[in-house]
Length: 153
Image 1 (cartoon, rainbow, N blue to C red):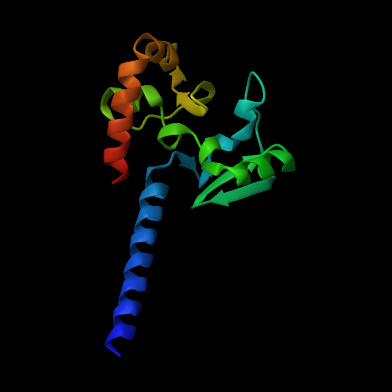
Image 2 (image 1 turned 120 degrees about the horizontal axis):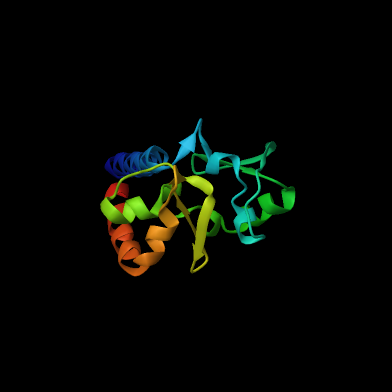
């Protein structure tokens, strides 16, 4: 009986940890009404010079975050490797995450692909943070990684 009770407690504990990790992920992701990338198709960043909007008709929920896709082909590609297509730092401005850990909104059409990952940037009122990022990318990226890991744990 003790073994059974221990096993049940272990399963419940693991479920609670997984649930809390998912809650942390959802809380820290840049979404509007649960939709990531302001409706842009995450796979489209890798296919052309500019990303394209997805459609509500072709959507997919990945670990609590919903993505829209421009085509079923892009959806199927995403399903093969979701982590590859999700934006860095939960879709927040990479420059600000690197600078001081802040979560700042982005212009999803202002992006850079670095080592196969999409990084998004603020670009409002004449302040394009991608330009600032490019001036000190190595340090900002290293700092962003540390700042983001702190936020996610």
